[in-house]
Length: 348
Image 1 (cartoon, rainbow, N blue to C red):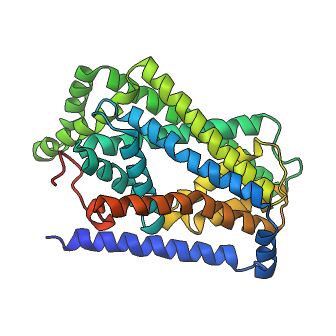
Image 2 (image 1 turned 135 degrees about the vertical axis):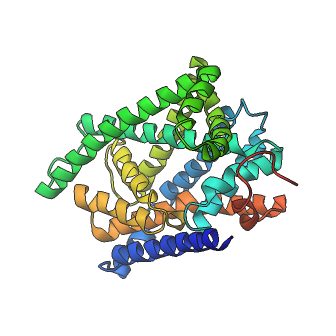
């Protein structure tokens, strides 16, 4: 009975690690390692230190926003939210297939005795909001005159495609958030809508899916009022501006002295690289960020690679170390958290 899920789990692990190895190979194969090492050694230590502090500042901002997204589920202290956030990001760094997306809400459910399903739903809402923020930043950059002055034909076409895709995805994401907000504002209509949709399925399947969907959509109640949406929107703007400042300062550390909005462009490519489900975004992040700098801004390959390596460490190592400390203090383990049930109250 458990053979297929077990095989599927290991297939995801193998694919995730295989992607990381392959992308790292393509990232590293043409590099002059001596020049990369020299670029890292000559980076401005004060700028690197400032970037590390900004990466640490991201943690309480993200964690506080999460408490707002799950406020309707139950009271959560900022400490518990920080602990679960760090544990989740540590799992994303160390485990394949973005396991942290499940580990984070389950860890919080363990700490607070809150139901896991709406906490899991809050991660989906968080990702939609983050996607919207990234798209807004990129469109602001693309329309503001900070695009590379001289791009080759291929890069120009890719840039135009990326801009069109951002506009289309931004419109789609905004529509999705609006629809979810309407469903959250009218719970009775939401239940009737779900019943009609599930009613199209066979009764045995629908009877199982309806409670899961209902519980999942309740996680989007965080945006059912204008005030709640404004608070979440402002905190998201602050979060991504701080992350952008971290990227900007890191670029400056390597002598890549571009206007601040260029950080939005680099950040967009970083997010595209991180979308590939490798442990901690390894390989995908490095290849995407290095290409953004060399392909569009004519950066030296060794400098771009040095920036990609160091900025990845800045983004992932501090929060991973903190997460492992919280994990050790909680008495939990990644294995137990990743395999917990996704609904109801978790057992002790």
